[in-house]
Image (cartoon, rainbow, N blue to C red; front, side):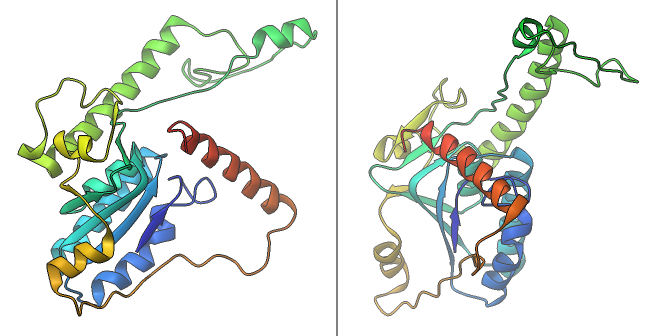
Length: 248
């Protein structure tokens, strides 16, 4: 089963728990000898990453089926979260893995508004409702609050990787800083179990007569129109930006 693209809630990424749930259920309910995941994702939503990863583990344990993750171009950030749900991770010699961290980005436009003569009017009930509003100056209090949230998410990510990879992980202080590694270097860090490819690896594990059945998300036959087309274009731009962070 292929897990390709950015991770986000419905309409905000190629992958979400909702979009892959039925295929994952189908894959495991067939009682195969193993489920192989082809992963090519630069990450995205931590919540959707956690939901998909938890679904993979639940189905694997309920059906007693081993899971192999085969990394293509990249399994970074949330993409690596998905890979870590597998029992074994196999990467290409040029695959990018890691980026175990959390990021929040935005913009500040308050100076531009002032120069154009615009006055921003915001009314809230609750002092934190307008936190990190891009149309007002950044405050130390808002930054501290955001850093606290990011730190908590980061700890959840670290806990997931430590639970799944355990003693395989190298004793490297840079492992959870958002750093990335390529191919064999990722294996040496304990982020992957080996370098290889899907078909040869499955034949090596289950014999030359192994039969592979592919499951993929279906795309609409007709192009989207109107607002949906615009939303799709925005999603594609955002996804390309995520891949571009890794030179892809």
